[in-house]
Image (cartoon, rainbow, N blue to C red):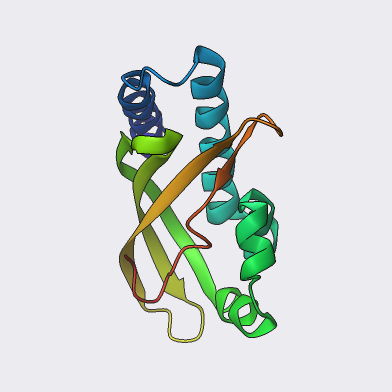
Length: 141
């Protein structure tokens, strides 16, 4: 229950941070929040194969994840996913810093990494894309 309250508070902080960006419409802000919540749930409870669907199509085409990379992700389990900060950037991008708890399934060692997500609005598709790639759960950013 406590984690749910923390997650909801982080979502409210995201909405307030993104709401300050004048160039985003109310619908874009709502779609961003919905997309980020779904992406976070996919990272936390789904697989990286599922998370690829949130990546910017340009990024997927230029640098698709390799089978080796996907196999490395399969050796990890995400134990937590918490937003730490969010900020609107120039060019319609939104940057979000996320703290991810990761457990190595082989050693059962847990660590925390901070990753940076960058979200780009696609006016043609009318949706947000994660433009920073899959999270680096080994080094963080």
